[in-house]
Structures are given as C-alpha cells and as structure tokens.
Image (tube, rainbow, N blue to C red; front, side):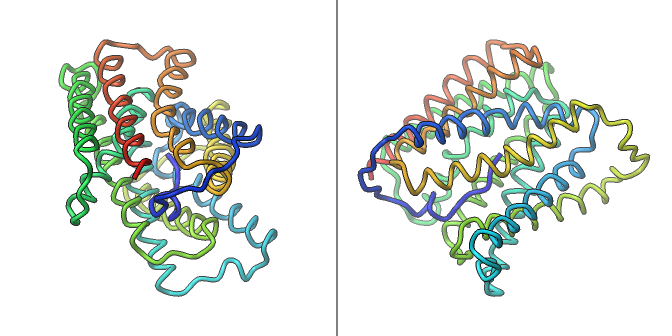
Length: 311
C-alpha cells in the first residue's frame, strides 16, 4: 500500500494535459509497482516478523525520501510547523501503521491477491466517510458502493468456509478502513506544503509505531536475521526502493503532469496485477469467490472513480 497526498483528495478539476510517453511510463510504474507490493509483502513475511519488517521498511524509506528532498530542494524544504508535524503523525499512523501494518500482518495467513482485492474497497469507504460528514455523493456513486459491498461479501467466503483464516480477512478489511480514514483525514488537515516532505514524516511516524507494535508483540524474541531467507531480504529491499520511493515519486509526478482521470485508474488496475502475480509466482489459487468477488469489487471501484472524476 502507498501514502496519500493532499492533491489526490482535494483535486476536483484537472486541466487538459497531453498524454506523453513519459506519462505512460510513469503510469505503468504505478500499475506494476504498487500492484506488486502485495506479492512483496507476502514473500517478506514468509521468514520475517510482520510489524518489525514493515516498520524497518518505512523508517528506511522515510529517511531516504527526506534525504532526497533536502538534497534536491535544500534542508529548508523539510521545515514544518508543530501543527503540520502533528497532522503528519496522525495520518501516518492511520495509513502506515493501520493501513499497511494490518495488511502485512494479515498476509501471514491471507493470499496476496485476496488481500489486494479486499484493499481495493478503499474508495468505497472514503465515499461513506464523505457521506457521514455531509457530502452527498451522486446516486451512481452510491450504487457503486453497494455493488462493491456485495463483492466484499463474496470475497469473505474463503474465510467463512475455512479456506483462509477469517481473522486475516477481517484484518485486511480493518486495514482498508484505516487507510480510508487516513486518506480522508489527510485531505482535511494542515500538512507540509511539500507533499514529499509530508510523506517522509508520515512514513517515519508509521514506521516507528510499527517497530513499537512489533516489540510489544514480542517479535524480537528469538530474532535471528541470519535465518531470514534471501528472497525475503530481496523483497524487503524491493518494497523500500520501488514500493515506497519509485512508486510514490511516479504517482506524485503524475498528479502534476497527467489527467487526474487517467491517474486514478491505478485504483482498479493494482488489484488485477496483484492477483495475476500471486497466481503466477506464488501459485495462489484462483477460487470462484476470488474471481467473482474480485470482478465485482474492481467493477464497483471503476464505477466510483469514473463517476467522481466527472464532478
């Protein structure tokens, strides 16, 4: 999963922009990289503790991103008021600790493809949060939410039938709710003006909290880095460099250089990529609830995104 930017939630209109080769390159990066993070997480937790590995990932990525901002724009670009730092911490806890951390924990028992499809419900939760604060969504948007909820009901069948642990399915649903609340909150609070600076602080806050939770869970007992598989180390490095840095940078660039309607398509392409990679690389089963429920959820997200981008 990724960090959000204020521009994503606040933008309502986007001027016409030419779709260049660079735009398509960045879009493919977002499609593939963010779609592949679920596979990367699944490989990491095969031998590494969930919260400690996730915390280390985001602390490292946050430090690298902060260093890149300082190198490119000067140390002054990292300045933020106390209120902005507090907002970044809150959003980081919701996105990184709650949104990403619970997914990492869930993927110790839930296939990566199923996790991605359940997380795809984020746009639906955001619509419900908006409705709860007085923003009246269009009827077509509400129809998309109802359709998506039906898809989620189908996707929970593997947990109800015992094919996967129900607790893992519920963890992913809780993660998507936390991510939605974090995204919604990020659009309402005062964050650092530089989106990269804000994301760096969010990563650091969420990463530190993740390590703390891992220690409270006792994940450090018997810790033996030498026992971690090479594939887990490589996957962790991939998540740091590509999932947290390259993917986010490409997305932030797209927000400024591509039509928002085109950029938003990542929401229903990522889960398809995740399911395909999980099946091809980890031989995850494509059961009928996953295929049917996933198709319904992706269609629902498509309805919501296509409707909202016309406002």
